[in-house]
Every structure is written in C-alpha cells, then in structure tokens.
Image (cartoon, rainbow, N blue to C red; front, side, top):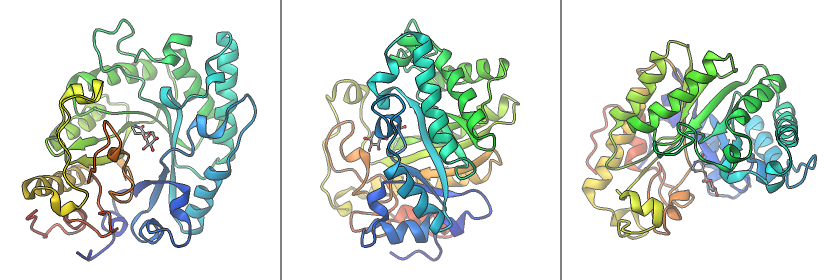
Length: 347
Ligand code: XIL
C-alpha cells in the first residue's frame, strides 16, 4: 500500500500530525527513522521526558535521551509536544517524600528544570496526566485517588500548572486524560478543569488520549471535544495518544487481566476483515471530526508502527495492531483512509 501524500501533508492546513517516539527510533538505520521524518510534523516522547526517566534524586537530572529527541526534531523541522510533567505512574519516589512544602519544592524544581531547558522549543506540555478518577464512588472523586493526591491533595495540580507557566510562558499547558469518550469520566475531568479555570490556574487545553478500540464510537470522542468547547473558555483540544486496538475487552481485562479477548496472530492479515475495516473507519472518522473542529490544534498517534505499540503489552501481552503502520513498517489501510478522502475502505 502506498500513500498518495504523507500524513503531515494531508493535515498541514489543520494541525500538526504527530507520533509518540523513542530516542532509539531516531538512530540512522532504525526502521522508524525515515517514517518519522517523512510522515509526522510533531513528536512526543513516549516516555523519555517523564519525571522518573529524568530524575531519581533531588536536583539531579539526566536529559540525555530527551535532548536527543529534541535535537532530532529540530534538525528535521518537526515540532515537539511535551509529555508529561506529573503522572502518578512515572513519579520518582523522592518526589512524594517529606512534608507538603518539600514535595512542592521538589516538583516545582523538576518542572522548572525541564520546561526552562526547552523553553520556546516545545509548543505544548501535558502538565498533569490522568488526574481524574475512573470511579465515581472514590472519596477523592472527581480526582484520582493517586499517590499524588494521597500525599498533598489536589494542590499539586495548581503547583504544576503555575510552575510550567512561569518556566515557559509561551507553551500551551494541558491536562491530559483517557476515556474522555466515556461521559462519566469526561464529566469528572471537566469538573477539575472548571475548578482550575474558576480559580485562574493557567490551563490552555484538554488532551484526549483517545486510546480507542474497534468497538469505540468516534462520535463519543467528538462529544468530549464539544464539551470542552462548551465551557466557553477558549480552551484548545489535543488528541494526544490516538490508537485503535483490534481487541474489545471487558472492564475486568483492565482491572485484573481476566477475560481479555484472545489474541490474533502477529501478522495484520490474521486480523478478521471486519475488524480491519472498523479500524480504518474509526481513524477516518476521528480525523474528519478533528478537522471539523477548530479547537483541535494537534493530533498524535501513540507510536509509529504496530511493532512499537504499548498495546502489545497492555493490558496483557498479545500482538496488537492499533497504529497506522504494520510490523513491516508499511502503511496500513487506516493510513490510506486518513490521507485520501476518496479511498474506499474495504478491510
Ligand atoms: C506508556 C508508554 O507507551 C510505555 O512505553 C510506558 O512504559 C508507560 O507509558 N497513558 C499515557 C502514556 O499518558 O504516557 C502511556 O504511555 C500510555 C497511557
């Protein structure tokens, strides 16, 4: 399958079209490297800008991998989306130790270090990632009952946004979360966003991770974008981690890794035709919906090829095929569907 134009060309007048990548993907000879240069106008570090990757003790920072990503992007005229300053899963132990004042100081120090280092070179930061709870019965709802919330309550969110704004006044600052396509989760996230806006905390946008599957409804994701627009605060919307799993799993697959859908083979041709067709249709509908909404200012897929996807190991190990390029680094039908509006999807 060959593409008549690149992903970034197809959306050049709408928004940057990005991918999450790893610094190893920028090596000469890496199969991802030519694809990234040819196809994407934005990159996000899949993990190499997360706090636990940069710092393990106060004031000691290693930016080697993050610098490599930044240098590669700049050498190739690719924009960079920053991800993620505060995430419960990537917080070094020391950052949650000590009094609230110490915790605040260590958080602000890290944010100042990384955001200042790349000031003017990163167009948007995911400042706080996954702060909303999935469980409305949580005593902490709408906030996630996370290690951060347990340590200092919700104040860490304000500290992070204020520190990021001070370190780079020109970067757009985002709160980022998954399952915004589900109305309950969306409402909890928006309650947090409204609270931030009401109190003048500097937030510029909402990131919708959009980890979809072939049973997802693109209209539900668009409803989340429309709900942000309806706040009337002029917030941007970014689709930050788009992928479309070929598996439709029940909740217990995610909570206890049970009753997950059985895996298909590692070859994309092993995936049933109706599933492949659904994937291409969902990608097309998401991109069409994004183009139709001026508040959508960036779209990023969470990986270059199916070989790279985190979904090969989450929620269980199983070959997944959620991205736009297959394991042989060839464009899939979903890629054709999003660059060519006239292409007829067959699966
Ligand atoms: C994942 C990466 O893909 C993995 O490589 C890493 O080990 C763990 O994090 N939501 C997010 C992303 O915001 O940062 C996560 O990325 C996927 C879920």
